[in-house]
Image (tube, rainbow over all chains, first blue to last red; front, side, top):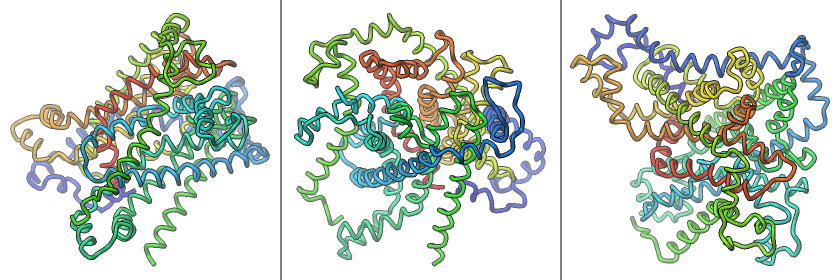
Length: 319
Length: 278
């Protein structure tokens, strides 16, 4: 967001900004320098253009075609037929609702736990570095593998989760976590919460550490207790980071099928699918037309959400 | 500070930190324990919280019954190559984006950011066709190319943050002394930024090592599979064998976990420097 802001102040003579020390030399070699810069940028641009943007554009095109991997000779333009097929499918609406449940159910606990952990980690203590290195480890593991680990722990027969609950006296008989639609949805969300706390902790911790100590000391001198300091000083100070982190995470979690794919494969009976994990079904069937149409719907939903989110923030700020 | 922590406050703090550590590490502990049980003891009551007796059978069967050594080798080769090339290319682009102002800069950064937010599945079909045309399907080189492209956007954004912490007086001085810009970059700045560059490399490596869907789509012969593709085969079979599955999971997690722990400080800095400022 602000990354683009930084570039937008229109500097008429851009060459002058980076180094006022050598203005004359810079201006003389503008063309050459321009080519030099392009040389530095070219490899990155070529890779991203060929292997990311080209397929994205072609993929968006497929959304309007009948396009099946197993029938490549017959790929006619079909207008909005793919979208109509999707909208006529009742599973589409289930999956959309599940996506919202998945996002809200994951992000809210992630934010709360992540915030709490960041508060605990804010002040230096012995072994903090080691503690962070250990506790941030989920980051190094793929969502797919996390799905597999939790699939094993939530196993209805030999899962350790049931065993712990029985030992604690909370249940008498094993629960088939991944066989019941509601429980399965709950289970994948538990796994995702566990996985995503780290990201919030890292972001919020960094933001909290930017709160000047003098501000906190002044608040303490004025007799503010910890709760008041938190709500009236810390949270307002890091508000922007919080709101942007939530936005980025909503987009990311919405697009994140790996845990579900590894843990339930969308089952039982397609009841744990979110939009992007459901999409995998279409790509596996080779129906890229439908998959792309679904992908475009995802993009549209996310763009709409982002716009409203940012507008709502701006309105609140204006008031 | 007035509120030097009170004793009860400290106890609560330590207890909460310990609780979260247990919750975080438990899945790792459980997969480790499972992997060292005898195959017959995995699905047996009562559940044991330490293997009894300890056994390496799950590991040995991975290498004898499945070609897990081959998959690991492929994953290593592809991930190291792609992460190194991706880091190098991103280093150049990040340098330009950190040091110069030009008209397309905002658009360029936006184009990089957007790639992080679009569901990758839209691109999967055309990407497959493109690789067919380039005759790169089921070739490790093809996967490397795709992974380089996958690494570049975020790695560029991350390295750009590190460059901004290095004063540009440094390379200006070197250039006054007659270095070209490229030489100045590699002789003067890269040495100063080594920790950041290592973090970027590790971040890329972990992403490539973990990548699933591109590899599943492109690599179909057994000798070319990477670890995630192989794991995908394991869980797709009707009856999952949890012993070898656990062993394979451990072998997948441990390398990246160690690398991450070593570089966590720098990775955290790299992740946050872009975001907090932005």
